[in-house]
Amino acid sequence: MLTIASVIPKIKDYAVIGDSRAAALVSRSGSLDWLCWPRFDSTAIFSALLDPEKGGHWSITPTSPCRFERQYIWNTNVLETRFICGSAQAVLTDLMPVVSEQFKRSAIMADHELVRRVICTEGEIEVRVEFRPRAAYGEESVKLRDHGKLGLRFESLGGVYWLRCNRPLRVESDRVQGIINLKRGETLEFSLSYAEESPAVLPALGERVNSAIDRSVEWWQQWAARSNYQGPYREMVTRSALALKLLAYAPSGAVTAAATTSLPERIGDTLNWDYRYCWLRDASLTIRALVGLGYMDEAESFMTWLLHATRLTQPELRVMYDVFGGIAPRERELNFLSGYFGSRPVRIGNGARHQLQLDIYGEVIEGTAQFANIHGSLDRATQKVLIGLGKHVATHWDSPDEGIWEPRGRRENHTHSRLMCWTALDRLLALCDKGLLDGAPREEFLRERERIRRQIETRAWNEKLQSYVSTLDGDGIDATLLRIPWYGLEDAASNRMKLTYRRICEHLGTGDGLLYRYARQPAEGAFGICGFWAVEYLALGGGTLREAHGLFDRLLSYGNDLGLFAEEIDPATGDALGNFPQAFTHVGLISAALTLEEKEKGEPHPAEETGANTKSVGGGLRV
Image 1 (cartoon, helix red, strand yellow):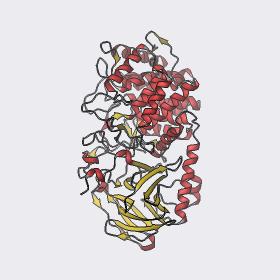
Image 2: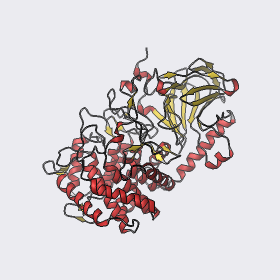
Image 3: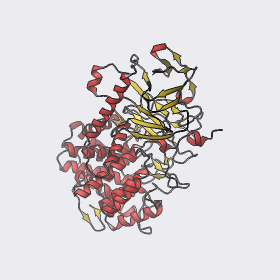
Image 4: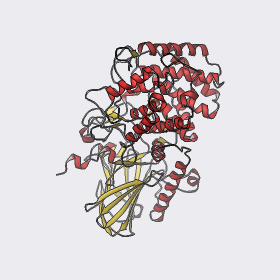
């Protein structure tokens, strides 16, 4: 009898494919266990990831025992899985085709398509196929209808799906099965397409599949080649950029936090959240990554989305939005699903959508300042928005909030929220000084910025602990304290910051380079991006570049074999935890690599370019 451990792969055993509109997760053994169409937060038709019995899957795997190897084709999001069964070998290629806009204008294409191709490269191999889609995250079965040469058709929630294959398969009411024998040079080809409002386009197979793969490889490689990054860890930085591009929703420019929902932060527990939305807290690091790598078109698209998404609530900002800038859906539980390794409940939507998080004002304004520093100007509409946000910060910064980690309890006076409000006003003052922000109440922004700085200096420092603390007048330690030098409020080499770093390592460190985001019992996984924040702290002067590189090297070992990171890492096993792949972790990796490159070249850090004119005094505080 199969155990749950033998049915469900580990999170790190998945790969992701996508087309910057939707994403699918494929296991190491060739099972496609997660797909939402037509966009990231749509209803899943394959969700075995969250329930292997009810969720539905599409597996293509050898019938005999074999060894699996996999890789992305160089500098692409096209996945190759090699089946090695003794002397026989076959290669499974998985992708969602992507092409240039010019090609789209000259060709008839399906709105959404997923291609799978198996080529026998050595000997003779037998492959078992099971295609078992389910509607509404597995709550309902679907009815498959055979339309002969046109393929198989089924419907779900207003959408029409077509599956086409170059080999005959056995069709049952709710699934397709078959065992196909392949000799060297023979292929098994699939095209799964989706249409909702437009007429269905049924792509041909044969050479058309090969052409779709070749065009997609070329498209991804050309996109990767646009990066101007020449610094250390280039291969991993490129992989993170490709993951970020895959998680971006091309029609709007938004970047989703992850491709999945309800992958647990603690196995078997309730810390399961839907991350298929766009968090403003990611804004400054996302723009930092895109601008730093030279992807100005993507950075501009993201900026445009930010201004569009927040237009109805400005100067107030929501925590998260959907990819079109609407409010994220309400949170609800899918109690019919067993959850990943029994981690329940499975949630869709997100209850944090109505939280107050004052840090996001600093993230949005910092991101805009980075973009303006490169672009050299801001249009009138953007200037008006920024001034409105600044006025809101100036009058509301001294308020308790839920903070960056979104606890579902009482509001507190979070140090990180104060830091980001300081950052918001500091960046607006810098834009004023550069002549890029006309009509701003400069004196008000200056006065409130200094009030925040004094409050952090006096009330966020715990003399007994000899450390900054996570809440004013509190005694808790939080990894966000590492961001104080990054945003330029205090020098990384100051005595206070060195003592704080020591306390963070003592209270939150795992002993092998990983950091928890805060002290929590029972502990969740170590938080991926926090380790990369530590790399940047060391590189900025809290340690040496050698120490920063050493820590970076250790952190890279926690990515999976394809270079992908989830939200968290289990320190005991190295397994991935939380939603996957996680944009926050990947932008943290890119930012850390950029900081290492800047410091090695003696170039200014973004805070030195986007911040107001300040100087270090006394204990290292910037005033």
